[in-house]
Image (cartoon, rainbow over all chains, first blue to last red; front, side):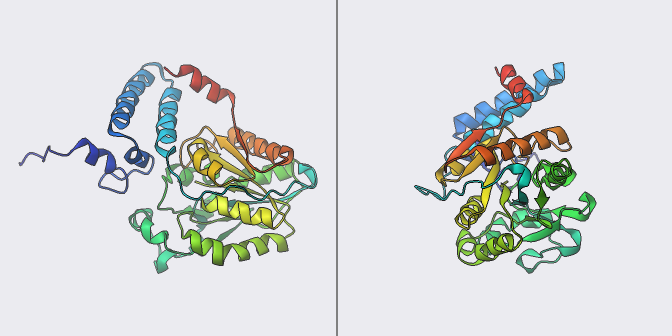
Length: 230
Length: 93
């Protein structure tokens, strides 16, 4: 058997987690670190893992991951606005009609949005075509608040969906919002919660898509919307 | 940034918004001059915490609703803290 080629550079190694041969969207941030910071992160993560295996406390591993992700995303700059709109709440939370909209890529299995015209696109295919998604107009999936988690699916080429597959509420907390309504914390919910794939054309979102989405909320008498990006 | 654009469009239409985002998104959230942002100390893809942590999910939503009610101007970016986070920071070497 031939020995595996062992000349890969460290830079190539860390970049391979960003849609490369080791693609792992929870670690793609490493490609935005300096080589020194990336090596320090990996070394510290190994150490924390061993300490956590010894005492069973994995909070330090999570904390290390958090620090790495925060560092990796710190310099990511896209849209910048000097000022922005603000609409004050006009009544107490207990009298609100609320909605939920997330960019998590959830949809009802029975209504697959078929992105890029592809039937039954897999998560892997979505990751492989994430740069095509960035050219497309987003599609809004309508998910009634009384839907069962087993009827939902999630697919998004831009982030690690593993947790969202196990429990949609990690990025699409629709069941918790129903509980808040049942507890009387809020007065009402719109008929559905909404989700789309945030990796999309911002130009098309701004010029073409958003007016219809906003009208939908106005037509339902929505007072406020909880938004969750991923 | 997609959700930031949604927030800005809704606010212009007189619909109040609150964004729940992971702490890693702080820079991009602040740059977009958004009305209300609650930053959670959670990993990417898990802004509401780990799967099936229903108490945390509810607590984060309640914190977001408080921010929705209390904010009186654009650009309020607030960190969400809970006892788990404090423990994690305490363990930091």
